[in-house]
Length: 297
Image 1 (tube, rainbow, N blue to C red):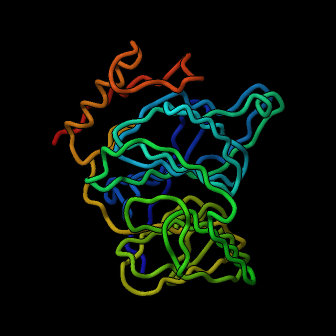
Image 2 (image 1 turned 90 degrees about the vertical axis):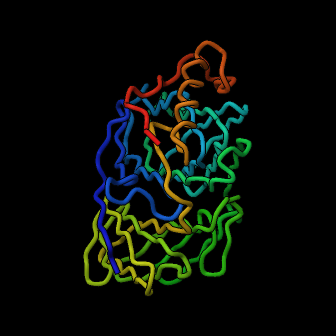
């Protein structure tokens, strides 16, 4: 059932640490999921907080989901939205968007905690240049189920006859499970690529134990069953592949030349030119483009 186990690699994003799972050198994507970060858990002292400065995206949708804390999202469309646990921020970059993610000043004053997941979903080639958009979802938009020791919330896509109201661009599923020790859960069928990620606790799949920070990439056939060896928090994800993608810094595209174009646009944005603009109420600083070599087609 398990084809590969990926260990999250710790990355410091400037005073804030994440576990980076995707892309992995030998397995870059799971369905349309091209990027997967486990954010925190982190505690900020009074006066400190999350400060992800404005930066650009193309060719993808970002999916932010929190377990603890709050994040204020601002983007170049003029959207300002606070996300809290159990809610979804779905931002479609398409031909280009700029956003920032910060701790609200009221929480920064007293100290804050933050724990969550951010994934990037690559857009199908025909929709890579779609208009940018932002959607916030909570409550009944995200179908949930509870029985015995299992709580499940469908964050995006379709699974087990339910469909989230998040607008997706290709067949996929993304689920949050909370399992009490001894509880079992099955993966959706009908998707060629599937994986589970352990946020907290220990689980077992097909006789193999997985612990916090590990992602199991599963075979497309069969009905994998997750058994909680302890109380556990698990994310299940997958879907139809959208084809190979180049990923460089925050930019995703099926074409290497498109990424080079977007990099040049971002470098011009600081001078008020190019196709990127900064969020209207967050223009004092931004993240410079990476100095890593651009991908070659």
